[in-house]
Length: 590
Image (cartoon, rainbow, N blue to C red; front, top):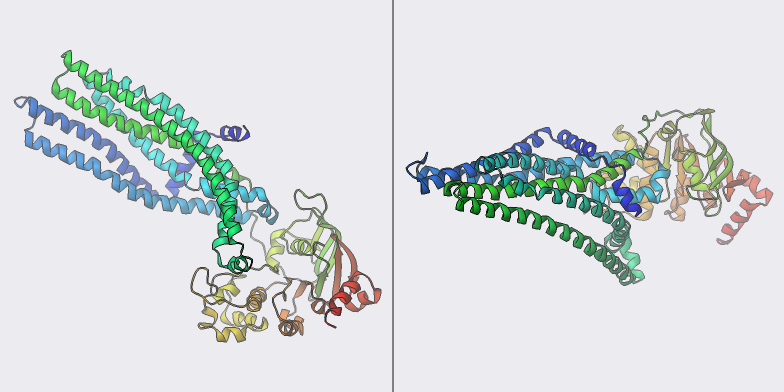
């Protein structure tokens, strides 16, 4: 019931149709005009077939009164029929081109929406489900509306012209054919509601099935699935979802088949009634055989134009709820912030009494935290899993807005966009871009020059690996999209580090930057961490205390709160939680 209310509520069909038509026109003005011309030609060609048919019947049945002889009449009929039949393939190919342009424009709208969504919104399951539903259903609707509008235009034009022909023969024939219109329109509205409800119900199943398909087909998961021999169990889950999808689809297909059958029966009944009426008129002597033949052709063509018209109206009704869903999705995210301004860091960054709670969670992930990162300092966050380290780092980087408290840059509260522009972040689950090595590095900032790229690679300890690659910095990495070169986990870690060092900001957030490095590589990386950072401040998150002990200041988090703060030596002397964790870890090496 709730889904039906959603399908009916807040759907201003005329406004949505007009908006979709504008989108198509803006996507390809010339292509839209060409498609419209084809539609008009197709509609008017039907009138030519009727006129040529009338001339042919006159030449056959009443040659002494015919305007043209049989041969010219047949040539005109053949020409009109060929023109009417050739427009269809031209329309199909033009729609193919126009559809791609419209798809690109609508995708741009969706990508703009996802880009301006803040991280909390983007990570929510509701946003992800809406995005999946939009991708599965709404992206093609603006073009479907345009196709329907073009069909509506051509259908109306054809109906008007052919109706005029029939009115000249016998006015009674027109209302008989038009009588099928009202049931078809009502059935189309019913179809649109059932289709939108079905799409809402199918989206969660489709998301789970797509995830299983990724697990079963993508390379990053192949090794573990074979190690655990788990492909069979995942296939079973995939088959269960297939059965659920098939059950829902069968039910929806039965609904649509019933609607199509009722519509077809209505049109067929009207066509039969019109043809029987022509026979009756001939028997009564009200029309001659030539007029009857032309009327029969007009009735058949008018029936086809009515079918096109009803299909177009049905397409408009069906697309309207999905367009409304697309508009709601786009409107759900606030307008994009102004581009952030990169700021120098002269004093430092401070989080003052910061609290942050994830949506739907009762306990804060960060609760009343105060930390300070001075310019040029290396500050470490340590604590057990779930203590709030990564959440706090995201707040410091401007990715999350604190619920309470403040984030200060050089003593002032500045826009989050400015903070993001002034901070570099490497997360533990950094992205391995299937691009060239150079692109992997420079993607973090605007391209400067070759020396900056090489300097970042050198400071990240990546130059030795670069020399071994077939095309150096221009080597394509990864094997998912191209036959590129795959790197080891530690080499990928250094690529991510080079990406961070290339971006010239006053603060660098390093979330487990040595997680994939062997002990020797970790030692080399942190032996002179300040030289590597080039004087920039750093917020370091690591479970390896051999890395954090080099920090100027260490904050120990537990349950979202700072429980200890100081240098390594100070914290060890207090014999608190840090000392306990450090002792436990170091004992494993003794």
